[in-house]
Amino acid sequence: MKNYTSSVPVERTVARIEAILAKAGASAITKDYQQGRLVALCFTSRLPNDRIIAVRLPADQDAVFSVFREQVRRPRRDTLDRLRLQAARTAWKLMQDWVEVQISLIQMRQADFAQVFLPYVWDGSRTFYAALVEQNYRLLPGPKGSRPMQVSET
Image (tube, rainbow, N blue to C red; front, side, top):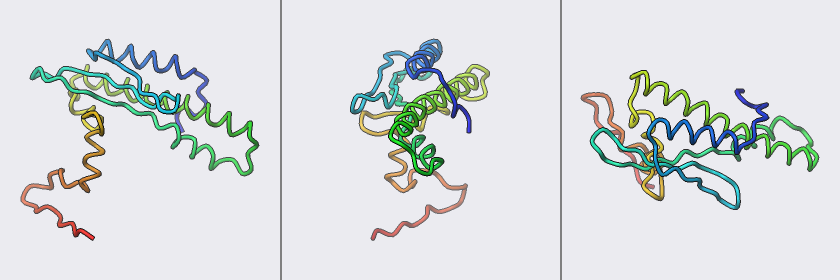
């Protein structure tokens, strides 16, 4: 598992992500906190057609913590506290790696901004990916000539 032993403080990792995004043309970079904990970075970017879009990049520390927690049989309280801190460092470090790779793909003309960040495009209440899930993926096109899958409402 990548970055599971990272000792880099979350603040330093997040600052690095912000710098990478800013250098790549992102603007209005903000942080989203829930219950005093950083859960996402949000920013805007301009597409080639001059449309400005918002993007929300979450780091799911709780999911990482649950993976770490599964590895410990009978943790003591201080162990759980250390696992939560490590989960935060790991989640944000993974996001940094992901952003670095995506920006590199854009810079090397292997992909464009919308192509890599589309799942994270944010309308103020949900991401594009969340909208797809809510619609049971019906918004996705199928192979040419195929008909959309019929979904029964129960």
